[in-house]
Length: 113
Length: 109
Image 1 (cartoon, rainbow over the protein chains, first blue to last red):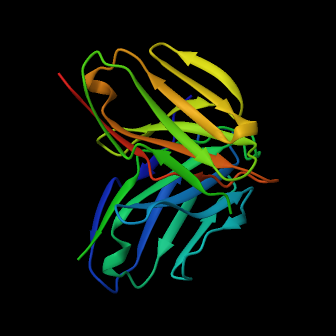
Image 2 (tube, rainbow over the protein chains, first blue to last red; image 1 turned 90 degrees about the horizontal axis):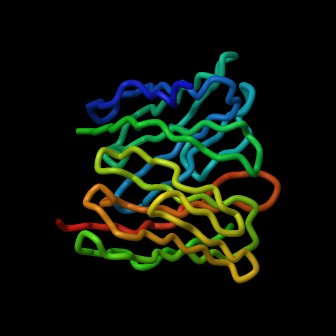
């Protein structure tokens, strides 16, 4: 099976712009989760989508949003970018159960100037 | 929510040495995974181990759920073992993992 893929891998934006990141899960997986990783805060959970519905949400402002399509691919959007949004954004897919293993993509490294 | 603490935060080894990484968690869990993050940022699953012991080559892990800790053992370390090791735990009815801050491992040749 192909692994989790994320596009783009690197992105440079300026403050105030918006950005959309994409994640394709492992075939058959219905859950996609998004994480932000920064040196200061570590790995933080953003949100999880399961069967096109947001099932769980972390403690992030409304500028961070996402969606999942019927083929389980997911996108996350960050509007009105701030310098502090510079981070590695990781997506993970799983079967969606509480005891299921999560598999991570390679990440998208976002730099906001 | 569940608190996760990993120790030590940093570890420097010579190639061939053994090491033990620890993960303490504050509540009962139904999911625990160990990951290795390589220098390019990729998180690689090492073990899914909410309880018991597992081994995979030079790596093994033990989780004592009743005492709320997990250990990751690395034997005969190699330079390719360098990176950050994360423990992620989930509890309750849904799996939203809480990650520890990680142990940064450097293995010198």
